[in-house]
Every structure is written in C-alpha cells, then in structure tokens.
Length: 353
Image 1 (cartoon, helix red, strand yellow):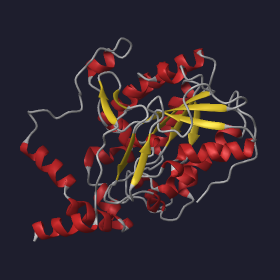
Image 2 (tube, rainbow, N blue to C red):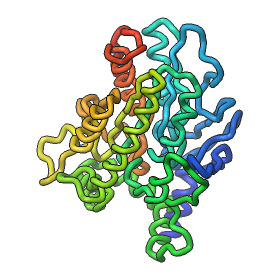
Image 3 (cartoon, rainbow, N blue to C red):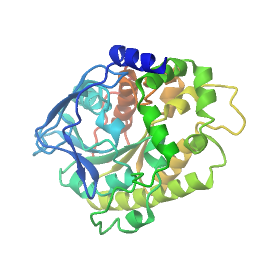
C-alpha cells in the first residue's frame, strides 16, 4: 500500500529540476553561479525559474553601479530571502522594490544575496560583500528555522578570520539509523502529501507541531537553554554585523518573518499553556534596539489575517506568494515611513494580497 501511495503521489505531485546553480562555498556555505538559470519544482509549488545576475544574486537588475538617483538594499538571508518556491516577481524583495519605485518615483532595487542554507553565521561572512555593492542599507531577513541550527563553537570562534571548514550541519557517516530513516521519510512524496492535507487543518497542525520538542520551543516561555544559547549567539553576530554596517554610514535592517505555526497562533485567544507566539519577536526587537538596528516587525500584519497559516506552504512551511506580498507591504512602509536614515518619506505602502 505504501509503494502504491508513493508511486501515485509522485505522478500527481511532481517534483523536478536540478539545483545546478547552487554551489558549495567553504566560507559562506552556499552561493550561486553568475549568469545561471535553473528551473525547479517542489511538490507543493509550480515550476519556478531561478535566474541569477552577474554576481550570482537572484535579482532582475545588474549588481554593478546602481542607477542614478536610485536606492539599493543588499539583502542577506536564507531560503525565504531568496524567494524559494515562488516566482521572482512574487518574492518580497522584488515586490518591495516595485512598490517603492512606484511610490517614491525613483528606481529602488534589492540585490538579493539570499541562499538556501545561509544561516546567520554565513550571512555574517557576507557583510563585506554586501557593502561592496554600495547599498543604501543592508537588510537581514530571518525566521525561526534560520537560527534553530546550533552553530559549532569552532565556526563561531573563527568568524572574524574564517578558514575553510567542513559543513558542520552534516550528519556525516556516523548518523544513526533513526536519523537516516527520518531523512528518508521527510523525502517521501506520500508523506509530504499526507502532511500537506493534514496541516491544512489548523487545529491538527498546531497540535502536531507543538509535539515537536526543541523545534517548537521557540513558542514556549520561558525559552529553553538551547534557544537561549541560540539567541545569545544571534545577539553576538548581529551586534558585530551592525557595527560594520554602521561604520559604512548606512542603516542595518532586521526583518523578522514568523514561522507558519507562529502565524497560526497570532490571532488565537485561547492559547495552549506556556505558549506565546510573540515571545521570539519581542526578543528580536530587544536585540535590534540594543545594537541600533532598524527593526521590521511583520507580526502585527500577520495577526490581522484570519488563518494566516494559509500564507505558507502547508507541508514545506516556506512563505507562499500571498505571504511574500503581505511582507513586502510591511517592509515598504517601514523603510519609507520615516526614521530610516537615507530613505525618503514616501506615500505609505498598503499591504498587498
């Protein structure tokens, strides 16, 4: 029965393409080949074209000198920043650039350095690369799953003088049989499809998600020791990133994106005991204020959407196009609503749906 289900789902929920543009990098984990194009499909998404400019960034504009009178943001981050599983024109980076170009009456672009697997420690290593683009601001977009992976102490200690290090996230040859089974099940098409339909039910989804232990502990207060350690490391990295960006005379912007489970909990009045979907957001805000970082808080906008989890792909958990549209409105309003050095005050951007 399982084999039949697997064959059927692979025929109906197709996956395809080869991630041929992404190449490993010994310092920043992953980057993309210049002038490369690839076409890929996940089971929950349509076919997506990924095109990279001469610097290997997913951006429609050149990474060379920005247009006269134009504004540029260098965007750091992982798969959500990249716009994984959405067409480029539907990504929050492209949408925000379009919104602000119209509203400010001048060219506004994002040079998107986002890459799958680019956790904050690797974004940290790309700050100089981002500053070399002569941007008007550097932005880092983060979601809970970006900081869930623990940073190897050696990798953290070598952050200012990075050496080619092995991939510390790899399970390696010593991975347990259970770990291999978990990896196999997570790639099973029938399991993905089952999760997709099961997770469309908000009540069942939240019940199952909250059973995931450490993966869900960012929703519980007080934070576990593991999450406190991760937040402490993030505080350290963001502080040093902010110092470097501020030294260049431009603002450093932190955009926080809720996880799907957080979004589902934001407008629930009857929360499970000990669960606070805003707790991690508050901690991010505190870290940003401590280091003089411009904070883009999207949680309020997500909380006003009924069944906000529908803005994400159910099984995969990444933002769907509607989620990117909402986020783009939040970023556009924050950048041009006043208070961001070097950015004009333009007509307020409304959330797009």
